[in-house]
Length: 177
Image (tube, rainbow, N blue to C red; front, side, top):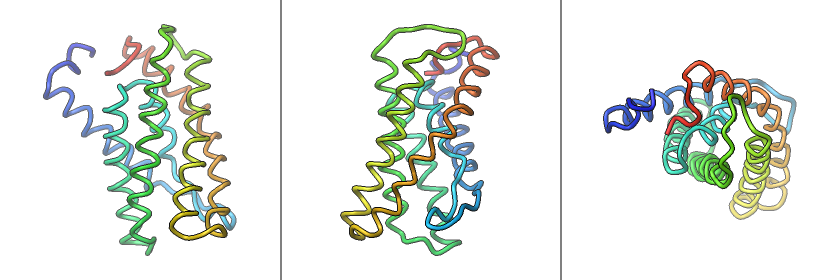
């Protein structure tokens, strides 16, 4: 697996497949009570890619997936077009931040380290603050307050832990890229 991802075609295939999968999880929406509207499952892959992929690759994959998934939501559900850029920016940088922080410590484990979990928590806080600041700048204080429940994305961390542990065990690799 590691050898396959070192070739250019292997990297392109990995990026394409992961972007498609992350887009799909972005489109699986769970209705929530107002003001939350809906949650999607993309945080699972944002955290997973943050831990398993290198920072630039994780950022590119997530930004591309958010462009496609949120772009579809804009066209289908009438979300404001600015949501596409906000999702690309905040969630793309979130994956890159997690990836960069994870690489500060060289802890190899067959499952997942405490440091990797902490970086995912930092990522959730970054995402919440990022969406808050963008919405405050673009729409004002009132709208910005409605994104604070984004912190609830932390509920996807245990799922991401399971995915990361399964990938490491099944593929026998510590990092994919």
